[in-house]
Image (cartoon, rainbow, N blue to C red; front, side, top):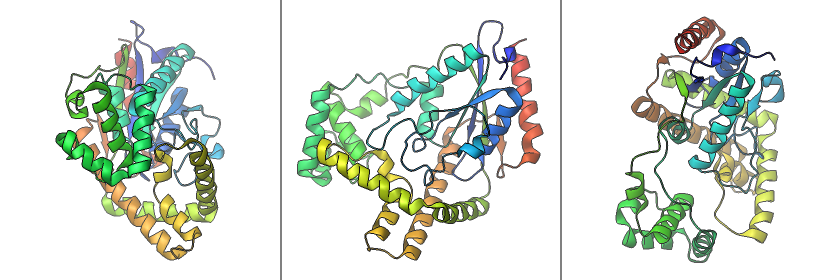
Length: 332
């Protein structure tokens, strides 16, 4: 692809397009359309699609769908890793800088509100947690169980505990790590001023918020398609790999194992659910997740363009005009 000098302004500022929306709203297709038009690179902002191991169940774009368009931060972490918002933010900023040097338009695409907020607003200055403390907390979680650790957190840090689900292993262990390492509640750290947006980056924001009925229909249909393409076998392989790594390494269950529908299809393979029940439960979980995403986007994401429907090609002219105007403003 050739260089696109328009993506940078006179002061070396760069335009970055953010395309957000709930699952199954068509944002990935929209990102690829913008990328084709403006010599862009699509950067993943989805907390599940960053992992390898379940590309079908996490709705990661396929090689055919990418159609030669550069995609970054898709499937770059293995099944046993944990990616924090801070880690993703560093990787995303690196990819934006790489796009700047190549003269390409960075297009961030995803529905993970925490990731998008971390990039655009920055994060609280929480210190790095020493490996020894992290390992100690994880060992305690494995030995005592999540219920006991949550009870301990409730005594030591009731404010933070009140914000968490008693079964959320990852966030409970994170809150405990921060408390032990710093002597200060994670809630207090989160109240500190954030680091701010990355320097020299101008954001252009697009958000899909289709009707709930259309979105639910898309969620249900897409899950059935995932099953036809082999999502159950994919889940089985991922759980088998995770079990082997956990046996040797221990640690907190990685986020990928909580991908929408994964636990239900794993239960089906174990003979604990029928396939029909597993599909029904997975569809319900997906719809509930989409509803939470819609609520978060409505309340927390300030978008310059809001699309009240799923993506379709007839919207391209609107997107292209918006991005072109942003590029002209950046260079004026």
